[in-house]
Amino acid sequence: MNNLARGGPVQNFYMGSGVLPTVENGQGIYLFDTTGKRYLDASSGPVTCNLGHQNEAVLRAMQNQAEKVCFASYNFFENKPNKVLAKKLINLSGDNFDQAFFVSGGSEAIEASFKLARQYAISVGEKERHKVLARTPSYHGSTMGAFAASSDPQMENTFQKMSKVLPKIPVPFSYRLPQNYNVDTYAEYCANEFERTIINEGPETILAFIIEPVGGLSTGALIAPDFYYSRIRQICSKYGIILIYDEVMSGAGRTGSFLAAEHWNDANPDLIVLAKGLCAGYSPLGAVISPNYIVEKVARDGGFLHGHTYASNPLSCAIAEAVLSEVSEKGLILNAKNVGAYLKSGLEKLAQNSHIVGDVRGTGLLLAVEIVSDKSTKEVFDKKYRAVYRLAEIGMEKGILIYTRKTANGIFGEWLMISPPLISTIKETDLLLELLAETITTFEKETGLY
Ligand SMILES: Cc1ncc(COP(=O)(O)O)c(C=O)c1O
Image (cartoon, rainbow, N blue to C red; front, side, top):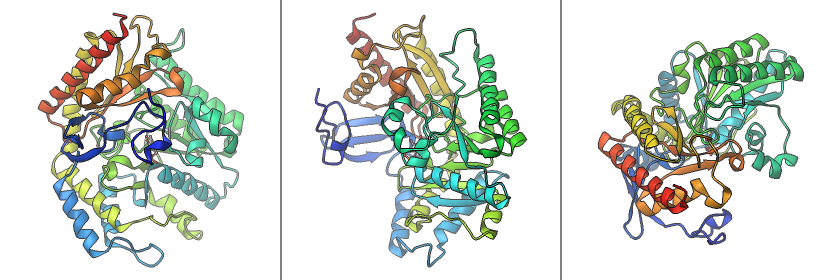
């Protein structure tokens, strides 16, 4: 195993197992390397390429905008793509949101949501509010503010000294539960822990609570029982805390509704952060969507003290507008729901026939399978098997790309994200299931355990 050189000079920054293939081109749900080998993109990259690759309408929009103007700073100009995209995004986001602020990705958008919340609190005379509560494990981004609100013990060992330590509340896991709890009683416990933490910290100091409503990589598409969402909403309202949904992964149609928030109508968040599927990998873009009452207060008091050179970028906004048009015109949200249900039942069948698929989670096309060495005990594989990493390698050999995670070195388990593009057909889903089953069987045999 070669832990050093991986691909070119950029990849050398990352540890990895061996040299990766070099990508040449993409088409639909497939990517091809320079040898012509085809890979089915079973996780949409890092749950990003919602439209698959080389969508023609998006490429046309990209070229059209590039021919007009690629960049014009928001310091000097409004730009049309930004206005059109904001309107479209707000229309798709239902009645609770009126304004959109665009940056270059998920982490930047998370930072923007925290600062917007903080400025709003100051505007309404609540200057003490500054702590953002979050859950453990969680991932909200790589920048220092987003990192401070994320929780992964492995990363914390390295970076926490550089960062403010923010309180964390346990995630209501559904598969690997502490003794004497079931899914509901554990979710109840986690909600109670949220309230207890607020009281301990001083409710007047709590600014916001951030959660991934449908989990991303850190929890493997985890969904809590319905009552959990209403409970945390009620607790936030009781203490005047801004509830932020991190929909970087779950937003833009992936879960079978435009926002995952739509699954829990009695638990509307105050702010939502989007990225990934919003521009579907065609350009870097993230967004915060907000109701008028927050933005108006901040604007009245001098405006948002936050920006980036590429905020409101015309080219990225034009591309995202084309992405969202494709999502609407091609009925991809409904497709995510229907194909997602088909894929999930296929994964459940696969789980029954496999020794190592312990759990299948998620909704729409945001799904994950949890890998265990023993289904009866839910034991995680010994480190020496490199289970999810090896599964990803075998997948690559067989022509299927799988995004994997062993959260916090396996303390919380390990899983494969099964989240193909929203354009996936039933036939392509059958092929995905076939390649995944082959990958799992090959790994099972290789371990010599079954
Ligand atoms: C839930 C969640 N939030 C935030 C981020 C950070 O987004 P980005 O990588 O675009 O900065 C990610 C990225 O994977 C994510 O999955």
